[in-house]
Length: 135
Picture 1 (cartoon, rainbow, N blue to C red):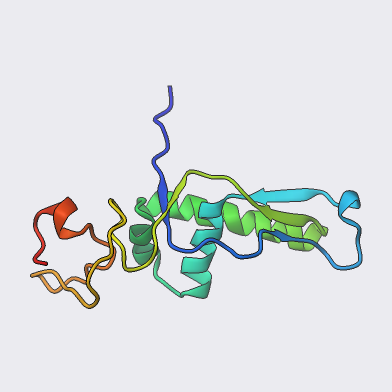
Picture 2 (tube, one colour; picture 1 turned 135 degrees about the vertical axis):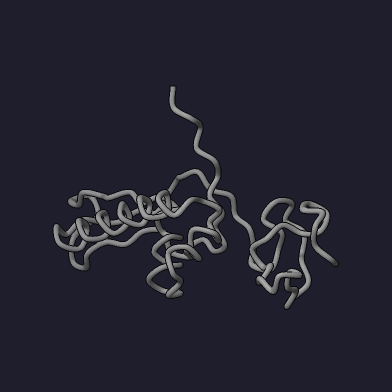
């Protein structure tokens, strides 16, 4: 039996959830469905320009998992663009966490905090959840 998929962290849901080629009625189109974590992987890597390791950390997944999600998203986007298919964003295993909030409890965190080792802690759990950070 496969291990259950853990929720991936998503900071921003897309405002528009459906794209289609212009001039073709929707009922005549095939649709490619892209999960929300695939859309987030595209946003982090290709729009925000994060390195793979940074983007994987933001989404709370391993680098190989991030690469699989990103590859799937790019394949679906390429299929839709080259074959004239619509793209629908829906579903997936994700949890929405607003930027600047704790990824575990969702509580607002202070801006500009750094860990004692100098690492940026915006993507790390808050003091209440982690227990090792200074507030």
